[in-house]
Image (cartoon, rainbow, N blue to C red):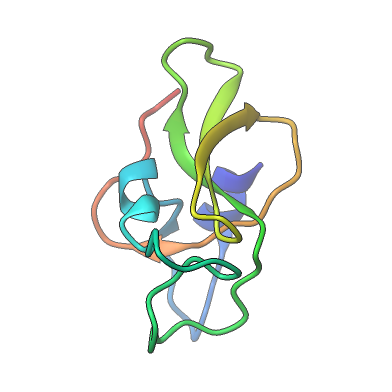
Length: 98
């Protein structure tokens, strides 16, 4: 559902949104910070200190996808049917096709 949400999103008349890969999402984290685990002076607004889905499927179990918790900065994986937040991005391909 998260991938479909991003794909169908329109912001300012622009389409072409996607979910980031787990590596892209994790690259935003500052491991020395918590609640949110983002660097000081980051430009983002309304970031929830919860987990955000990535487009990356867990290779060990296809029913799981990787996520990043922006409260703690931890990376984990959860069932694809679970609720979570999405951080839509543009450009690149991101989606692993699973």
